[in-house]
Image (cartoon, rainbow, N blue to C red; front, top):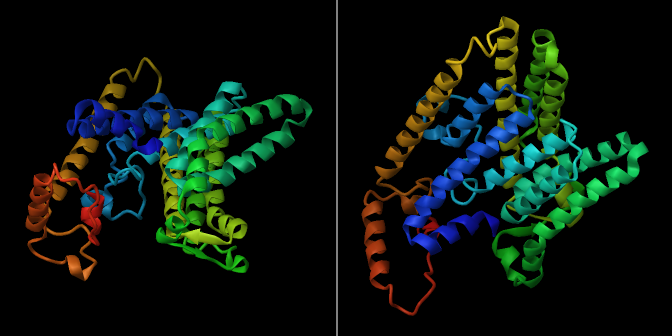
Length: 380
């Protein structure tokens, strides 16, 4: 599984400390992936750097313990839960960035199409829900590109073939796992049949997606008025990302229509929130750029001090939010799922630590499996 590969290699090389090493490497990779995504949206380098730094510090993923963000609408990107979304959102940003480069920025090289296929294939076997919410956008992008480039059908077919080859190659482990898995496994994960006639409704996301689309429309108007000089690339990238957000709503009903069953359907709706977050972040960056362009504040000679200052401030804000979140988690004495009555015990942490010591004392035991109904012990 790609989402576990880096941590597996690091733990194999460094032992338990490898987990921390891999965490740091993932955070660095998220920074570069987010920066690539924001550059693909034609944001100014400074704006892309600041947003990438805030994303890499998970400011938008740990809102529950960040007082000044807690009042905002529920949006999340790259939270701490392992491996989803801690690792898998990295693959999402890489895949979405490649999609924007191909469909919005007009990158037609075979390399760009191979990159899109690779990241999409890895995302599919790492986080099925995210890949299927991104899938409709990629499908519509390929169809529109084929129609618009009908005069160059051979070149388009070669590029789409490169995408299919890379995606298929990356999905081989996923397909193999589906073929050899025990038939009880999907059922235990919660698969259940759904009437296809009821599959065309996207429950609970319509208003949020509509409001995000309205923000994208207002952003496009601001770009047209305040920054007409490079409006084409900005408008296309913003529109493409808003389209990915809108099309992500189709993942649940389309999957039900095709398969006749679903697994944990609320996850599809959660993934829509991720696309809303990306769209709103890019819109915020576009509005900042439009204001800066109209005021003439981003001339290279006038803002040499602004770049390090803005990046430094973003770093401090992100690191402070991260430390604050971890301080809350480290001082937690109760179970993380206090909504379950069985876990509402004052001494849960003491019991958890006692269990840790007990299991450590059994390191030489031949048993390899622990049976538990406690979700926190299971995750640990």
